[in-house]
Image 1 (cartoon, rainbow, N blue to C red):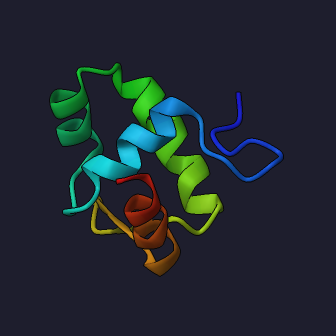
Image 2 (cartoon, rainbow, N blue to C red):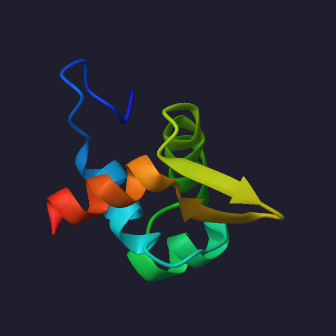
Length: 75
């Protein structure tokens, strides 16, 4: 299931991950903090990277400018 809906809104899991990534984390750290299975976090983060909302550097994920804006809108 895509994490970004056709109308541009985010699925609840994607919203939670965006909020968690206000500070950079590994996929495993996201799993621990949100109590989600690793396979779900990895697939959602991969889609968020493809949507240019999240970037990966050395195994750590962080918000892009667009992702940070989404996080502010959700708060």
